[in-house]
Image 1 (cartoon, rainbow, N blue to C red):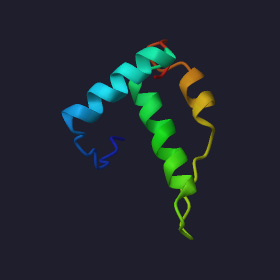
Image 2: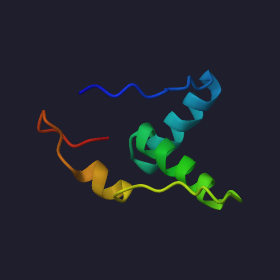
Image 3: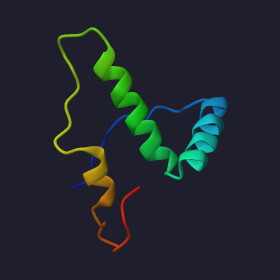
Image 4: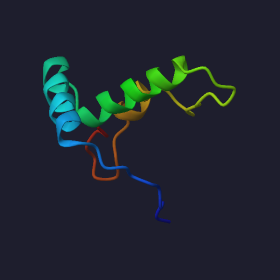
Length: 71
């Protein structure tokens, strides 16, 4: 069943910075963005803290249906 989630467009400058930092850290920029956003949200003062069902490292290490690792 397809998920219809909102996918905001990032500015070109942010994409460039994420790409360069991802290259420096040797990780996909999508995983880097996910980690940075989750860390920032966890530090934000709010009673509605984000929760994830499994750690990012476990999600990215899990093979996908195509047999490749998720990014």
